[in-house]
Image (cartoon, rainbow, N blue to C red):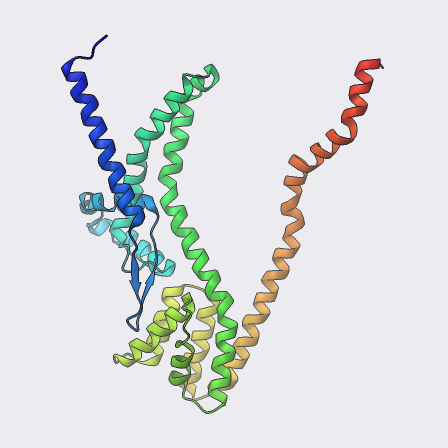
Length: 304
């Protein structure tokens, strides 16, 4: 049966929209984004593909988060973005817009896939509504989950680097270098990690006129880690009281390493408990099937 002109026009418009979306996604996938470090160097840091595709639509939702009622939400989101290391690439209102755009744009695709799959199975057809709701709910939760993972990944990298940086600072200060000079030397490493980024920013802020205490406190606020807050608090207190920084740095380095070993022991003690569920669900049934399967098969054939 030939299609009507209106149906042909509809198909052509849908094909054009799909081609435009595919071209936008392909261009966004190949785009490389950079963050500018405090010393002027640029480091590649990519946002998720979904964010890069949907970011041009984010200004349409900016008015929803511009009021005073959303000020606390914007501040909390901004702090998480900074802690994740995406400052300058993603603003607070853009991320909040993504929390609306991601489920809004993925819902039609997911619903179409669920409907297509439900035609192949009556069981899937009966679960069509719950599956659609589940997919849309996961899409709505995904931006916040991605940001939490990014923050956690960056914080773990800082925790891994912190004891070695403290050891290097201790050796440099005890060798006679000024604290800020030692900090600048630690930040001159060619390989940039999250802690080096923060040290570069501290050095740059002090060069621009900020006091050492304020720059260190700002770093502790950005990183939002108890270990970094403890080190910064000790350094600020030592600076105020005139205590030797070398001894403070050595004590803090030992404490950070001790907490690191405690976390490792805690994870090691939790491993058997976490392995219990996979063992009960997957390993033990397989072992029982291998061991008892032939016996049960033989008993069924010969009779009890």
